Image (cartoon, rainbow, N blue to C red; front, top):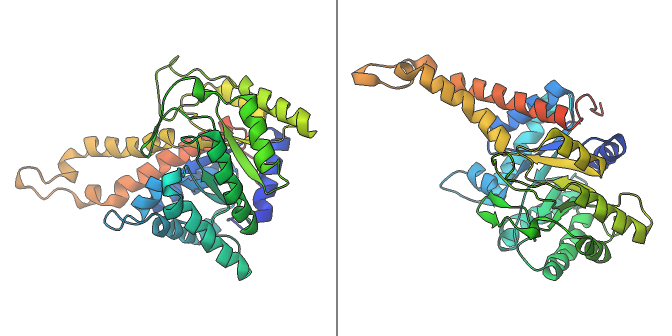
Length: 340
């Protein structure tokens, strides 16, 4: 059962929270990066989450097709086939979906899962993220309520974001300012609007200085204690310890102690993208520099088919990214915790 059922996915998140670890959620953009993620999880003996963004799904459909639902569906179906050969369990997730892409991405994917569930099948994806960080909180929560109701019917866990992640991802830009820090008031309003699991299970990307991308040391000011403050505030009102399943976005370059502190406050999922992109591309660059005369037909020569065969550098790229995924599992303490 390499692709988690809804029940197993819920168990994965419960085990992470109870066991003091989090799952790496690896962004993929191709069958090869998917295989690298699966390999990394297997090498670390960790279950995990594979996710695709709107831009990744667009790319997966083909650069002339550019259809996000087609790309995401193709990835999910391919993953079901290849993941069966790996000794770990993975969940499939869609990453940041802003308001202007809901009708072209998240909503139709939920509809596909509703149709599948009606036929007795599992949903296509195990979770979807609604990113309402760019709209006022009241509107964010109104949309979240609508989406959570549909997700619950489709046996899907929803992820939502309050506060703003700085930096840029897939054209969504967050300014680096005080909005990077979610307040207890925001968290209380969220719990009032969408419950604490009673209206459908969801994960919460609450921000504590997170920024997408990689920056020089000292540029990003993380305050993991913000997560404790919102858990305590909402927990006190609703009588529930660590009521939120939290998600850590924009973690590239974070100190290990900051990651571990965030996990101790209820983070069960951490997105990993920038670091794995580099880990995939770096071996390709090395291959090209080392085999310049082979990958190019210099001065009318014939080159070397073995070095410009995409499989030659593709294998190195997969190995490089897999190693970074395994490292993420170690950092998040999920290594060696696989369910089966």
